[in-house]
Length: 130
Image (spheres, rainbow, N blue to C red):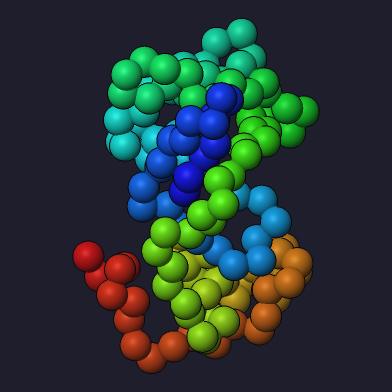
């Protein structure tokens, strides 16, 4: 993911999952920390710094207990994308490799809008095996 900073400078966050047509993106604080970013939360605000201690973003706590960040993405939206043709596998990846029975439950109880009827595949996900 390429983020435009003030004055035209860019920051690259690598190994981000790309989900086509998703209206909101989620950033995991744990994953950001693992990628050598520093995240500080104080006074109901989140600040993120790069390896050179330069602030990349600042966000305030919203009403739904999340940090809403309006990121100005650069023209390059995706540096590497994997296309999944089968919607069952797409939703499996979209939910962080959630098991298929739980995906079926999300669909049957109408807990997620737009999720199709999920069929449990016979093969096992390579990523889940590692």
